Image 1 (cartoon, rainbow, N blue to C red):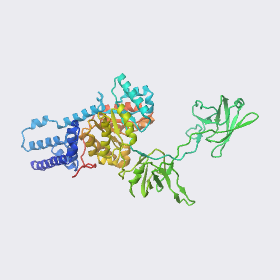
Image 2: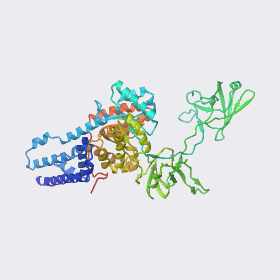
Image 3: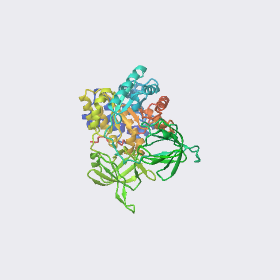
Length: 611
């Protein structure tokens, strides 16, 4: 037994020496850390050194002799290793400070640092749960006090304003209402403003047809329950729509004799002839019954039948249908920098591509970076294209992944470049302009699509120039490069006093692949815990509940896992209040079962400094 302890002591000594070497490598960064964060940064460097190798065998050996397996030691890794070494010496009879070792808790200071930093960044935590709840504010919050009151009373601790939507005037109104209601209800709530960042999106699609379908109520076996309802109107403003009715404008002048209209006759977009019985005609409005499903289109001729005559009219301006590019595996797609409307592929009579489908992304720098063979992902990873040709300002892709049977690529869908280093700053000109409003109303600012330390430094400089260094800085980890650069990003961010990290699982999952997502989000949480930096668990938390009113089983499990972060973010939806209340209950329950969790310690996947 004794002989097996000596190799353990030697291994611990080696690790502690490696930590000292890592401190030497990171000395320039450590010298710039904010005084409040120096102990935290020192522990982070220790932890990076510790995780640069697979420590699972060491865990097994320590557990075999009844000592800590280090699965929850990230908050104070070097003191914990030194404590274990002293305990091994005690087992060998080389130490007599056993009672002192039992009294010491090297993890306590680290946990207290994390909790203090969380309080400083997010505000004091709620009395009945450890993890805060952040809610994304919809535009309606600018005018609806009752909505914000519900958020606060349901358990919201932070309000998120997304600068990718709405305007500074709307952001200010939302912030003012949140603060006023927080004060009046005596429920603390801080405000985080999320910079839009340089997210690349698909450009405008060609306009779709101006068509609307009049539907018929049917049972589960397809039998008609009753005629459909159609409301035709000649008024300037559309009338209030009856339940389950289709609203169709007419281009005609209303006359008193039109109150005698008995029926309407038309041929729909498919050439189907329809005769609609009019049930009421008054004040420029015709109420009619629809015998079968009918497609109405702008400009379509409508014949109004009176007892002894008829009137010709036509369908007025209908909203254009959202259009898309239909793509399936094997198709080609040309991605262009120039802002122009997308176009469908042009084929010859044999189906051979003459001109591939085209869509813009509007950022020339982005299209200059990928090389032949690089992957481009679109619409949250629904589509993947491989670069097969490259010209100035454009990339030709072959679609390698698409939904079964093909899918629809629409406008404003995200584009990710997981294999390419894009020469794009994390802080755009729009972001810099938005900082004027952010600095006026925000407690925290989230930096979107951060990739390098230079991105963080740029934001820090902008805040310093505006005398706003007190605003907390949140790094959104949503790209492959950000994950790989995370140690350097954290050390750079810790030059600021108040720092947090958002695990932005949507874009990050697209970039690194869903198979690795669970592993990588754990690594982010470990590094944050080692740096005593509060983490925000984000993207699709209780999304089905927020949007549809009913959660999935997997979402409940995900929400329970989120309790290990210091904050959880919910997005918008018509049932968001239910989501806040349920998340509050889940976190409160989980707090009674665990604090963080014990973990295995393989080698980290992020980049650490080897020289």
